[in-house]
Image (cartoon, rainbow, N blue to C red; front, side, top):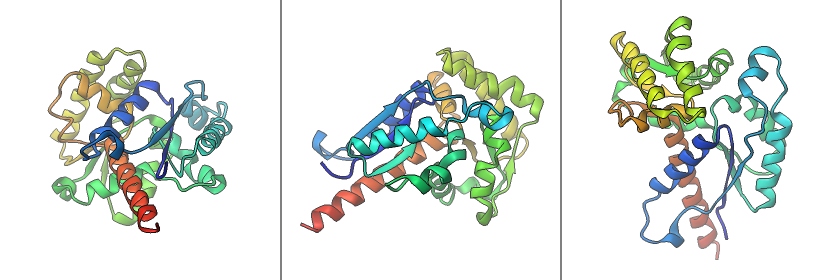
Length: 241
């Protein structure tokens, strides 16, 4: 089997399931055998990424590296991290990984490049750790992207509880909170809103919110990039005989 994608997941488990579902949805083929071969390492016991970044909690890096090693051992040729905040350790992981890795912000950048709403500031919804670490802002600095954020109080009232509720599998109240957050950003002039936490699209989908299709889903962007990589890799292998 060739073109195997490795998914470093478990951060959190439901978001990992959602990401795999999107890989399947984004693969336009006619038979099972044409789909992307995927191996998933979902170990939820990875230490909290937010605590590690914001308050000196235990680093998840050794656990994530162990997951990458397991993916390599299972035959993966390329890896993705199904968590936005965990990309804080992307460069460190990529430097020791024996396989290429796709970056979720690069995938989002590809989506934004073709989005009409880029003429306006981009609303960014994420964990406090993702925002504090400037994971999106630094990666998109050369694209001159203007970001718009909710106030810390609004994030504490709307976004952070929504993320926590998804992890508790309380999806409907999470979705309603997130709708309020996106509505505030759009009322203030945001164009596209980036759902830069893998729990957020799960919340909007649970309430059937039309705001989901009007936002940039980072999980789906990474799923599309993953499908493109696997299809290209299998074509290269087929062409080489």
